[in-house]
Length: 89
Length: 225
Image 1 (cartoon, rainbow over the protein chains, first blue to last red):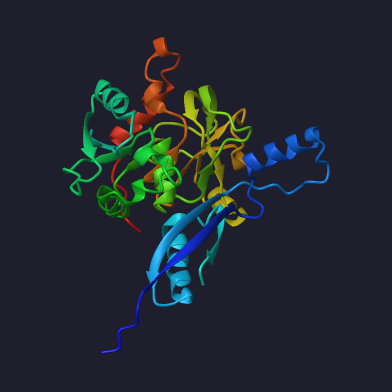
Image 2 (cartoon, each protein chain N blue to C red; image 1 turned 135 degrees about the horizontal axis):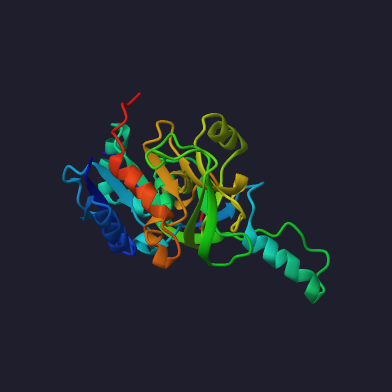
């Protein structure tokens, strides 16, 4: 039987409020930035980063597993978008 | 008149006893159901009370959705059983997909705690028995994530199907359409951010929550469509 070796992948998930969804944290920061002289900043959005390790036989498989987690649990698709990145691909 | 009401307690729930007391004071019989049970003990209605289920980790209600009791409650609701989610309970119902939309942080990033005036919009649901549209109620809120959001299509659907249960008169948290509570299509699942169990005595500032809980006690199981 061909047993492919499982590799442990380090995965980063970025969760951000969806385009068009109000982001009170982002807009509060956006309003504060000019006071510090950062006049050119805009479209500030605050989300979160989730780092995890997952065992899979390829980077692509690891990404698929984590994307499934995102859909079913790690994000709320009503208000959030996610980006999944395998760090040690 | 019913009736036995199951008030669900998750780790981190903190309004279960207020809710039980309020229901019992109205002549109902409420009991606390632990989240890991999967048996609803034949209750006639379910309340998901306020608090911080599972510490509100990840997102409010996100982890509570996986508590074993939620699967039984979803089946109970599909069969037309009355389910009321208050505050954190509303958040749990949206995360569980039993109500549309989501609740995010209040505009202004303030934790809000105080009396709010809300208007009954739709009364075709388990807490609207005997009420009429346009009636004003004073019921307190107590939340950080009460800012209701949904897609434009969902909002349109809620309006067309008369599923917006309450609107705030003076929107405190940024909710889309001033929404303070919504129902499912059949009207047997309702979620609301204000706390009716805290408005059950004029000494405490308002008795307007009592009628909502009385309505819940009298609510009949709807016929599943």
